[in-house]
Image 1: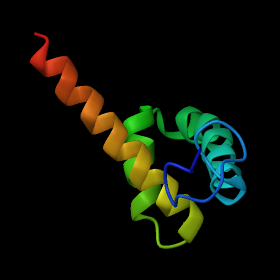
Image 2: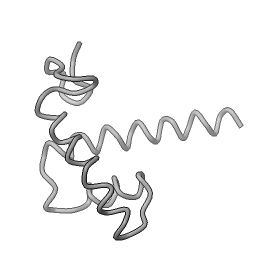
Image 3: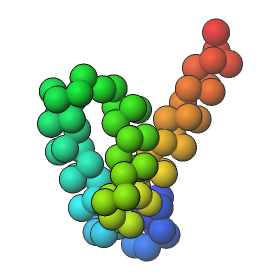
Image 4: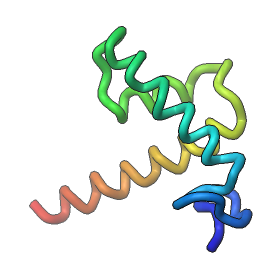
Length: 80
C-alpha cells in the first residue's frame, strides 16, 4: 500500500516513514496546545498549518488531515 500523502511505501497505517514522524509530532503537540489555548483538533490543525515555522512534511500531513475532516463533515451533513 501507499502513503496517503505522497504515495511512497507505507511504514505504518496511512503514512510513509517521513509522514508518520510528522503525524506523531502533530499529535504529541496537540495536548500542549489544547491545554494552553483550549482549541479543538480542527482548529489546531488549521492554526499550525498557517504557521510559517511548520515544516514541509507536517504541512503535507496537515493538508491531508484537514481534507479528511472536511469530507467527514460533509458526509455528516448529508446524513442529517
